Amino acid sequence: MKIITNLSELIEIRKNLSEPVGFVPTMGYLHEGHLSLVRQAKQDCNNVIVSIFVNPTQFGPNEDLNSYPRDLERDCSLLREVGTDVVWIPETNEMYPENFQTWVIVNNLTKPLEGARRPDHFRGVTTIVAKLFNAVQPNKAYFGQKDAQQAIVIKRMVKDLNYPIDIVVCPIVREPDGLAMSSRNTYLSEDERNAATVLYRGLNAAKDLFERGVHDADKIRTIVRKTIEAEPLAKLQYVSCADPHTLEELVGEFSQSLLSIAVFVGKTRLIDNIVLQKKN
Amino acid sequence: MKIITNLSELIEIRKNLSEPVGFVPTMGYLHEGHLSLVRQAKQDCNNVIVSIFVNPTQFGPNEDLNSYPRDLERDCSLLREVGTDVVWIPETNEMYPENFQTWVIVNNLTKPLEGARRPDHFRGVTTIVAKLFNAVQPNKAYFGQKDAQQAIVIKRMVKDLNYPIDIVVCPIVREPDGLAMSSRNTYLSEDERNAATVLYRGLNAAKDLFERGVHDADKIRTIVRKTIEAEPLAKLQYVSCADPHTLEELVGEFSQSLLSIAVFVGKTRLIDNIVLQKKN
Image (cartoon, each protein chain N blue to C red):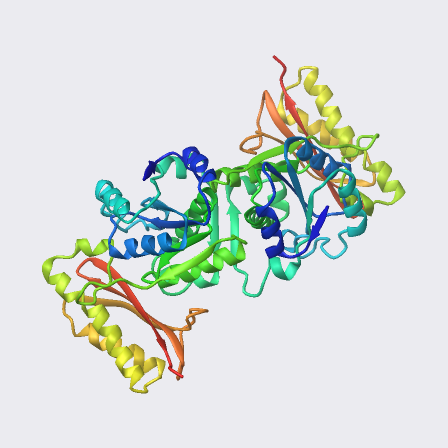
């Protein structure tokens, strides 16, 4: 496994990799969710490149850029175990040099949900992903369904900007008690960690209701809200039952939705989602 | 010479081209300026791809999108003569599909000069060039010095977004009487065509003054303004004597500048520029 920090070195090495090349962009502090992406990429591709970069431009001024957990040594050892071919750890001053002033912006799809609560977040995400794509020139790139809106935004960017890249979205990987894996789970105290299962419990309560034939968007949102409000350590930021393609909030009966939530557990902001879909 | 309209076909053909691949993006109605770019690309590269696309998003609402001259047959015949390997003529609805909503934006460098007079022009330019780059994946791309700000903006975009592409800027090609070649020259009546030499005359008057030791930015701008004001059919929109890297307007003595102008000759808007540089 090659470990590279230099952009020009990455571009040189990329030229000699046999295709298809799979790419997994990460912010490090890897867990089974990330590793599931790398394993899928290994199955699909001749070579797999993983990037580790805590991208400053996708963090808001009051967010956790400085405290975001980092452990490069452990990350590299995990990546070696799952057969990663190249790890690229870009330097911030090479990614954002003096006078940096170019942004990739996706408009409509970034307005609701995470975009409404985290101004400029998606501008940072689409810009860094475009930069990574341009350098790595992958044939396939892998994203987790955990960041559902991000995956939809990246797919739109790839289509709109004519990137010849297949975007593969992999399922959420959960802890045994249902908590979606996230590098930010490390922020939780023991009590908070127990309370954090309320995200999945809320989503599951809605899924049960939906499968019992209740297909009204308001009722679906309400049962999630009530479940989460019953947990003293949790504070719901939003619950959304939206069209999975346009991300527009649904009203009345629906047959398909992305049900997504953001919840503060203590000071830690967690997100989760499930797709609800009528069976034929 | 292959002529392609389909994006997926372009991507397929690109895979089998030996590198380096040179790329010349154009809006068609080709003249010697464009052909000089293709000839340079042929010298440097194993394969040369030329695109012809009148990009709607870089035209303002009151600009000449609909009247912009087109002659694909003549363009293809000229491109064949200079040894072009692939001509790509994208369809507008494939470049801008329904729900298109992604833009590439360069901030500071697009604010003055053309950007100040043509709002959203550079957003259209950088977005289409990024799209063309993503599809063509060239090793080198060729732009004309005639659109000096555009070349500077594209270089910034390539650096900021980590495109592994060399940007080659080629000199302005002029008619025997000094008028810079432009597809828009075709709009000029005979009288206007004669009057249009005033752009080059104005720039040359400044160059003479500079070479006689007058290095003050205001004096340089003034001599251009006066030369153009003396031509009844011409109306100066702007004259800029700016830092060639930042495009900031110069004040007082300078050793290097991009001297650029936009002039209406009748209803036709023409631009031209020269670089002034102290000799050692």
